[in-house]
Image 1 (cartoon, helix red, strand yellow):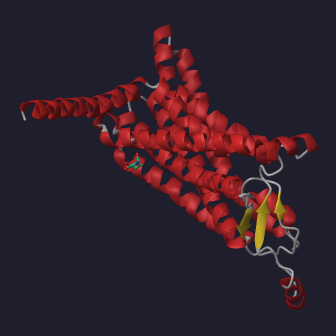
Image 2 (cartoon, helix red, strand yellow):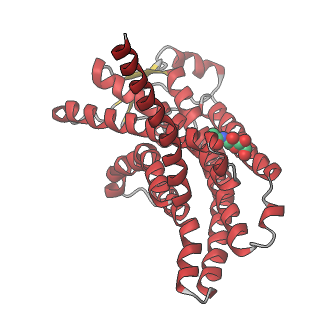
Image 3 (cartoon, helix red, strand yellow):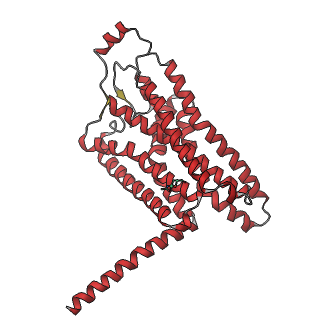
Length: 333
Ligand SMILES: *[C@@H]1O[C@H](CO)[C@@H](O)[C@H](O)[C@H]1NC(C)=O
């Protein structure tokens, strides 16, 4: 960023205009298998998350903060996978692994925006569970619709703004080759490694913004769960305890997977073994987490399962009766 004009101009001639995402290119024997696996993952993720959002929006029983947050999380996950998977699938088909300079930063922008928003949304969900379990008497007054709307809105805005800053800093970096990124999407660590400008300042900004997006929500989530778990342990009856735990266990699993993989990828020191494993863990939090969230919620939550059954029940008999009517029409003709 602090290059003189002259230096900038000489570099301009060899500037990188496109990046090659090596990603899974290094294992050519597995291309077809990987393509099929990722395609299935993509379809399941989209279907599962869209189904959750539809059930939440269409069922009046689920118009409560906990489920409205869940609906938002599902929409977020749909967008999140869509910033990463379609490009991977496309590159398997075309066997072309390039991504333009602009394309790379657009991907980086959406990835950072959605990850930041998810982190805040998950902490809003923990706060909701904290109020429900630790302050049950005040839950209805504290977690009203207005607060729910505000918390969801703020989560999205924080993601949008923080990512705009990070991306504008990152896009000012100068890249003069090589242009091969050993990753399957434009993430900031591999991008910084390729830059030939002074990266200290940018790295600082990235670290500060990255921590601002993950640390406060993580601490809030941890604090909520400390209170939740101590409260649950104080419940005298076993059934009462497991009932209270059931209302937050899905969320606890999702939060643990999200922050667990983020910690491994971004916070642990980059030893050589970990560096190789980084790609594997990145697959976890960018591709697998969005897919398993719907399963964790829909399979473990009775209220949600009931709403889903009702929605299917409403759709299915309609078709059957329509079918019978059509048959009767045919017979009577
Ligand atoms: C997202 O949250 C807002 C505010 O709570 C809510 O009005 C909206 O219905 C939610 N969206 C989904 C898909 O659940």
